Structures are given as structure tokens and as C-alpha cells.
Image 1 (cartoon, rainbow, N blue to C red):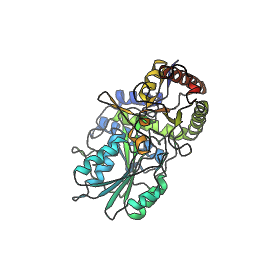
Image 2 (image 1 turned 90 degrees about the vertical axis):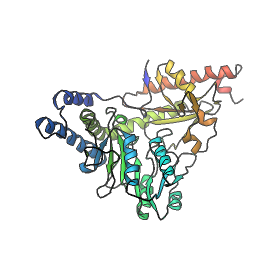
Image 3 (image 1 turned 180 degrees about the vertical axis):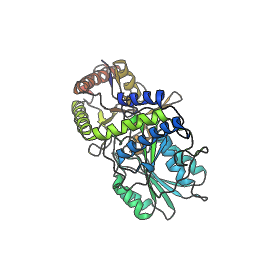
Length: 394
């Protein structure tokens, strides 16, 4: 039995998107910048996809800038604003950002920019009052992730965006995990910049987009031919963009029914695992992505038992999940997200994430709960031979 529960890492490309990509590869393969018929057909594909992606977030098509993915969109949002200033200014981000944001601002620090990292509570949420206190006269940009990929917490983006807007700072959010799972409407949402990724919503890898609110001035990061309204040079990846467009359009149509279905499955799995001692949910249970579950192991030691250990063991059982910690150069590192939420170094090695998707069924949920309990029992017997999983605290 093969069960994939890592949809926050990537989603399988849906058949409709694959069919569109195949058609583009065989029929509309021209360069979208060329002026002849072949180029015109490819350009039409790109502009159709632009309208489809814009429709997902209720944006005007001209505000969508295609990129290679969410990481490039995040980088363009940050660096595109930074390049407007000859003298370093002040930026605010949360302490639970994706590395595409946190690593980018690390570079800015070396260039003299001042960066404030907003703390979060034990559920991973930013307090809007902390944003108010952190704003300075020279704060030019605030960036807060919408839905945290590791612990599933959804931030109060509307309130945070209004605070930034009142102060006069621009507001960016990485909505990669939210798009296609929760409603997004940039006409009412107080955001100036918003990042999207194709392969998180059943489109192909290698395509993403940055929404730029009309009137917001950003500068390109790449030099070149001036594609994407001069903001992202490089020949557009027409097949991937076309697949992205189809996936975005279908995600918009299916969003509400799929959201309800995923919440039911998510809560079913939370319930099935609620009686497992030492398996502690992380993130905000209420303000949470509909497809997302995350836990840490109270008895993790970072050696015999860690999040990475569970990933490997469940993989052997045919179940794909992910660890909350990252492996760098062969060394297991504590999750910076869990550390920011106040967890200890050891606990931050014991994080796991299970994320659900279109192919997930109730039978998958029940089987996964049973297997996870069996795996934990087997691992614990190595540490505590005389105890069972359910007597571990005795």
C-alpha cells in the first residue's frame, strides 16, 4: 500500500495540466517574444495562463509576473523593493519564514540593511501588536508568510497588512501553501506583493508567480531581454506556465469542496492519533491550513528517535511524510521554525509533518494512523524494552 502524505512538498501534476503541456510542446512551442505566427501562438498561451492564475487570487492579469517558482517570486519581492533604495533601510519579517525569505534578508544585513524578525507564540503566530511596535520611520517592507509550511499555522495576514499599510510600508506574503487551499482575494486583502508556486497546487514544477499590486514599483533582479513587463528577463517556460494556468483555474473551481474534504480528513487523522502518548501536535489547531498536520515527539533524542527516523521508517512501510527538521551536509539540524516557537533543541529534532491532498482517502488516514503507532511502538521498544507505547509515561 503506497500512501503519499507530503503534499506541502509537492503535488502530483494533474492530468489536465499535463495534457495542456503536451499540446504546447507539440503545437505552440515558439518563443513568446517572437513576432511571427509561431511566437504569437506561444504568447497567447502565456497570456491565457496569466489570466487563469490571476483568476485564482482575483487579480488583474497585468499584475502577475511569471517566475521559475515560489523561491524566485519571494526573492523578486524582496530584492525588487530593495533595489529602489540607494541607502539601506529597514525590513520586517517573521521568525517562521520560508528560507527563500530568511536567507535573502541575511544577505541584506551584510549590505547594511536593518532587519527585524518578529517573534511568534507557541503556536507559531505573529502578534499584530508586535508588528506595530517593530515599525520604524524607515521601514519600507514587511513580509510575513501566510501559511507556514512546517507547522501549518495561518497568520492574521489581513490585520498585519492593514497595520503595514497604515504605516506606509509595503506588505508581502508568501502564499505558496495557501493558494488553492484557502480563498485569496487581493482586491480585499491588504497585500502589495504575493508569491505563488505551481507545483503546490497540482501544476508542474518550474513555474511560479509574483503578484505585484498595480502602482507598486519594483525593479528587476535579472538583466536580459525584458520579458514579463521588464521585471523578469528570460524566455518564458511556456509549457510549464500553461500547466500552471490550467491547475490554477481548476483549483479555483474546486477550492471550496476540496477545502471541506481536506479539513474532515485532517481532523480524522488528528483524532486517530490523539491517544498516542508523546506525539504532540504543533502549530495552531484552529488557524491552520486545511490539509496540514504536524507533531513533535516528546521523547525524541536526536539519535535513535527523531523526525528523520520516522520519515525513514514510514517510507519503508510505503507512507511518504516529511520531517520538521532539515538535513544539511549529512547532519540533522534542529528545525528553526520549532526553535522560534520555543521548543528545545532536542524537541526541534523530533518534528514531523503529514500533508494531505486530492488522492488522500479516509482509508489512507486510518491505515497511516495504525502504521505510525506500530512504528513508534517498535522504536520505543529499542529504548525502553519493558514498556509499551501506551505505558511510556508510567
